Image (tube, rainbow, N blue to C red; front, side, top):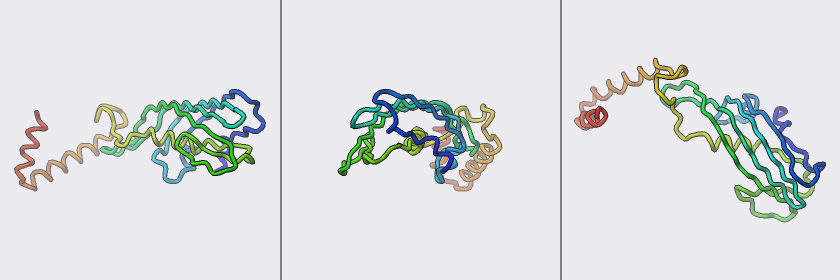
Length: 174
């Protein structure tokens, strides 16, 4: 958690108005989160913090690339990421229902940790299905794995002897 200390912003010493913070996100960041979907990447985070009397408005701009594991060939491949998000942080003593866009901090708090927000925004931008774009035509695609999968699927289709497979092969070839 030491590497996440840089993502803590002490807002009590800041004047009312807009402030800008820049962060770099890399493997050290993702290693701090045990079950992260993303293990590797290079991203720049620009955070515009607008401090007001009763709240903070955080505008995030995250750009760069993350490396995902292809669901077909299992090779890591880069995926561009461009995220813009807003988070509102209110100060209060009473329990206010937090929503996705609104967080509540106790008036005694003096800093905010934005690492969790950055982590969430990056993971939400991760595609549900990740595949190499041009299968076999990119340098990171593992063609050996793709060929094995094709051979196994053809062998399975032949072994089943199910006529539905023939109909599906005709559709696939058209």
